[in-house]
Length: 353
Image 1 (tube, rainbow, N blue to C red):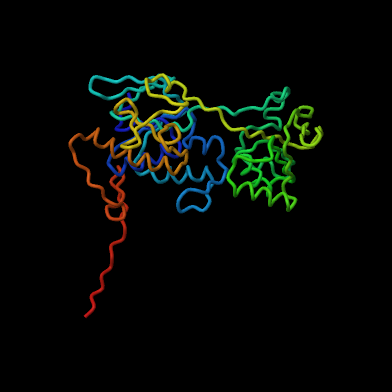
Image 2 (cartoon, rainbow, N blue to C red):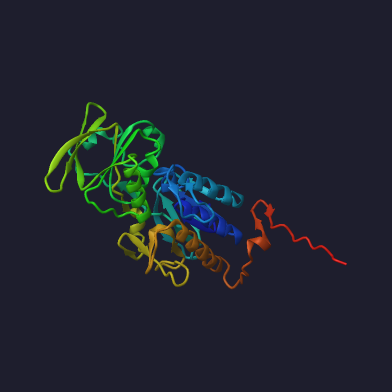
């Protein structure tokens, strides 16, 4: 049995930052994740994708963000159960919870924080008859390493942020990038749409709208795609390419957590955001993309905020009646469980006669 103060389900950015915030309160954390390594989607799906809305970082790769968060929380010595999925939860007479994984590993804690991001997920695949024959043979639903597209001809399909962002990024990597979308309007951020249009005008991106990929050409590997373009007249033509990347988003699923008696709304866990992001079951919290409440924004930044407030509430559950006085880390420093301390430099006062 693994015992801890806060059991965190999900080792993505929000879960990792929870370790740091809990550590400031002298609370120990253990994390469970079905993936074989920490980082969640940032590591598994788009480690090389740049993120632009992390404070103090004008741009940081998703994989690098994971490394920074791991470095930040390392001093608090978190435990990890990786490659195992949280399967069941049982509340004990003493108020603690026992969470058992699909491999039978048991964990006990007075507080459970669900930070599972979008839960388990799989890519939404286009309805192209022969697409399965080319999966991992030129068809990729997720871009993990953009270097495989170096000096290659790439066709991307989609109209959201991922399709736009990767088209922009690969315009400096691939020999040719074609972006295909079934509408003339895109769903992504306006600045990304404007950047794609700018790159089109410079001849660095081929933009084909309104159009859809209807088939894939190749013998054992992608050699091209069949495109149907609508407009004043319907046109069908082929585009030669080495890779076809349909980026239509992910289909999220909560998995076994959906059977834990939590209040669910549109595949997300309802929480009390007016207080501490606690669910309808006292002692169980949900933070990050996995939760929902009025005004919810699915941003990493918001997950960090939710984790901070959740840890304050967890402290009161674990230490009932004990008052915690908030101290800024610039004054109190950061004390790891190994006894080390990092404090801000003391002010130097010079006496003037």
